[in-house]
Amino acid sequence: MTISTHILTRLVIILIALWSLVAGLVLLAFHGASAGALGAGVTDQAGQRLVGAHLLVLVPAYLLLAWRLDRYRAFLWLPFAAQLSLTLVIAYSIVVGETSFEDGILAVVVGTIFVALLAFLWVSEQRTFARTKLEYLDDELEEPAPQSQT
Image (cartoon, rainbow, N blue to C red; front, side):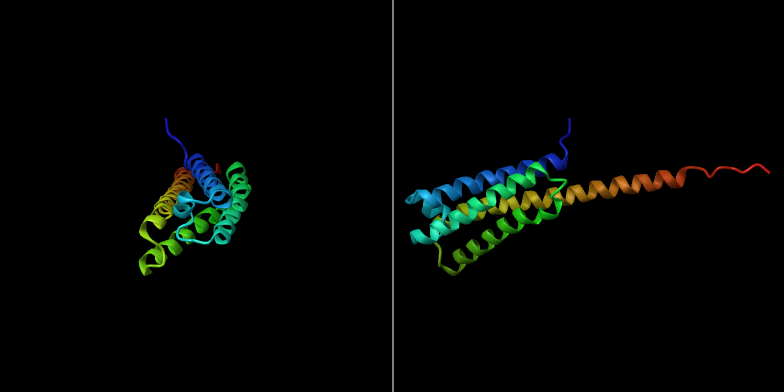
């Protein structure tokens, strides 16, 4: 039994929505040790609430995208870009020393995993489309032309 890349893409988007929901709720409502790790170095409470609110705003968009992937395929870049931008910004903050390694590594690792999964699934799906189209074109070329009787 094989699972299509279409289903796996939906599953990864749902996981991103769950991650964003948990991180957003923690940052918005609960301040403490876990908020520091999920906030990736945002130390003030207003900044954590702002990041949490933005994460919560993205959750319905992710769920709609996962639910109607065929209809909203043009927005597939949204979870990819959101995770990539968060990962790059937090990784940069760790490298320059603005964010401690302990506070930023969780968000960087999770974001990197999601970005890699979405990129892999997108490339795999494009290969499948290309292979299917090539097989279709090969089948058309192999069919003999009808012979006319004169």
